Length: 580
Image (cartoon, rainbow, N blue to C red; front, side):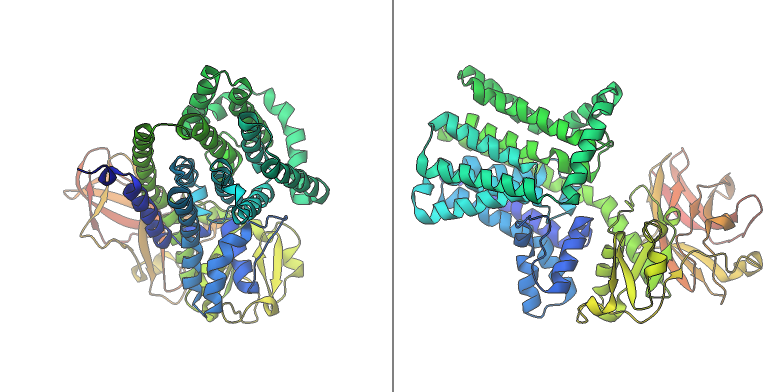
C-alpha cells in the first residue's frame, strides 16, 4: 500500500464535512447570545456590523450579506451565517495544509474549533475564536518564510491586525507568537519590525479608544480579584473545571514547556505557564468561573490557541515525517471524537430552541410579555438575547410572522414600559427599536403594545371545563421511553377546546403533573410538577418534567393538571411508557 493512502488528510476533510453538516442542522441553535445580535444587525442594516473596533467581525458576515444581495430568504441567510464559519476556517486550513505545506500549523485550526467549545460552538461569530484562526495564519506565513513574498507579507499583516483587534485577551496570543519567533530566530527586520509596529499601534488604539464596555471589565477585574483570592474553594473548583474541560489543552501546554526545558530554551519554557496565570487572573472578574457556561469558555479561549501554538513549535514544526503523520492521525481521531460530541452537546440547545418556537407558535399577539419563572428550565438559558433570537426564528416564516417575545427581566431592566410605544419594540434587554428602523423585507410588526402571556384569566370554572382539556405526548413512537429513576423532559401538546384560556400565571398555583399506573394499579399519584409556560388558548406545546419509577417495565402515565392544595382536574387519558 502506498504511503499516500495513509495520509490523514482525508480524516481532516471528513471532520470539516461533519462540522458543516452540524452547522446546517443546528443553524437555529447557533443564534445563541451575541450571535443573534450581530447577524440581525448585519441583515437588517444590509452591511457589516462592527462594534468595539473588532473588525474581524466582518468576516463572519460576508456570506449572509452576499446572500442578501442575491435576495435569499432569512432562513437561507441564517444557514449561510452558520456554515460560513466552517467554510472560512476550512479554507485557511487548506491554505496552511496544502499550499504552505505546514500541516503542523493546520492541525491547530480544528483544535480551537472543537476543544472547550461546548457553548462557544453555538456562537459562530465569536471574535476571540476568529482571532485565534488569524494567529495560525500568521504563524504559518512567518515560519515558512512566505513573508519574503510581498503578497504573503501583506496578507500576514492583515491577519495580524485582525488578531490584535479581535479581543483584548488575544493580545497575549500575539505576544507569545511574536516572542517565540524573536527568541528562536532573533530579529528579522523585514518580518518583525512591521509586526512590532502593528502591535504597538493596535495597543495604543485599544488604550485610548476603549469604551465603557471594555472599561467595565477592567473595573470588574480590579474589584473582584482580591476578594476571590480569599476564597480558596472558588480557586480549587475553577481549577478542577479547567482540568475536566481543558485536559487536552493543559497536556499540550505542559508538554511544550517540558520540551523547551529539555532544549534549554528557558524563556520559551516560561511562555505557557506565564500565559496560563495571566489568563486565569484576567478571568477572576467573573464570579462564576466555577460554572461551565459560555463566558467561562470565552475567558479561557486564548489558552487553547497559545497551547496549540507552543506545542506546534516545540513538538511538530521540526518533527520527522513519520512522527508528524502519527501526530496528525492521533489528533485527527481526537478531533473526530470532539466533532461527534457536537451532536450530543446540541441536544439541550435544541430543546431550548424548541421551547422558544413553542412559545412563538402559541402567541396570540405579535408582541408578548412572559414571566421568566414560567419558562425557566435546566436547558433554557434566559439570556439578554432571547428577544433577538425569537424575532429571527419567527421571521424565518415570513416578515409578517415576526414576533417580539420578552421576559419580565428585559422589560424591567430599565424604564422600557414608559418609553415603548405601539410603533416600537424591545429589541434586547438594553435596546428599543422603532418599526421604521426595520428592513420590511425580513421583519414587520403591526401597531400594538405588549400583551401579557401569563394571566389568571379562566381560573374560575376551570375544573368544570376539564372535559375540554387534553394533554398528550408529541412523540411519533408508539410509546414513550424514559430511563428508570430519572427525570426526563418530555414534549406534550396541551389542547383546550373551550373558548376560555387555561391560565398560566404562577399565582394560580396551576401545574401539569402525572399519575403512574402499572397493571391497573396506581404506582405513583403525585408526579413531578411543571408550570405552564404560556396561557393555553386553543393549543400549545411545551416540555414537562416526568420522573420515572425506580423499577423498569411497561407503565401507563396519566397526564393531569393540579391546582396545588385544592384540586386535580381529573384528566383520564393514559399513554404507554417504557421505563428502561
